[in-house]
Length: 244
Ligand code: PXP
Image 1 (tube, rainbow, N blue to C red):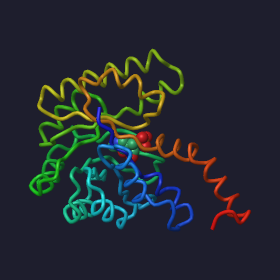
Image 2 (image 1 turned 90 degrees about the vertical axis):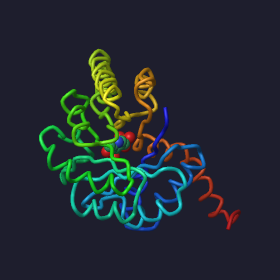
Image 3 (image 1 turned 30 degrees about the horizontal axis):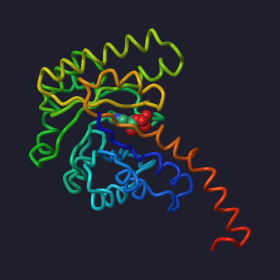
Image 4 (image 1 turned 180 degrees about the vertical axis):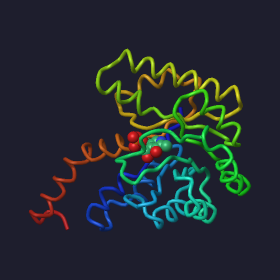
């Protein structure tokens, strides 16, 4: 399975101080160096983490594919058509949510989405729709002309994290069924949301259906922890005058 590294929450830490560090652009380059297959970033309407300039710099500097997650709004479409990421993933967005809370309801806005997607595809940008693992949503995604679907793994992850393994297994089966249907319809199949170093192991069983995972929060969270000791040691060295 390919890995798309979502760098949003590097920017979340930066925006806590509206300063210059840590930079999601730098993180994207390190992810590329470490072997990531893709950089994923979500430019939210409220710009709570990624800023327009981050997107521009990442597109300019990173050589692996760039996947822009965005809400289906006119503003975002004009940014996508200007910056030209390799892929646009359409996600629902509500201002008050902490994170994306569910898939896009493609089935109830087919005509609108079909029109929205057309110029993006014409610009040579792949279009993926972030949907719940439901047959109706998969079929609607095909009808509106998407190239791919990203199946929402948030419910699976939540069940797993709460040790409700029976329900996690049922959710995994739903993801598998939706993934197989999408593949049979000729759509590419990706997945993501809420995946961690632990719960991702269940998803690996679907490697013949899902070709790519997009993972963000858990990687950023672990980067903070893995790097904390070194960061403290380096500050102590500076305070001791051992390092300039
Ligand atoms: N895929 C999509 C469509 C998302 O919206 C997000 C979160 O921005 C992710 C994957 C990554 O989720 P997480 O940060 O929980 O790994």
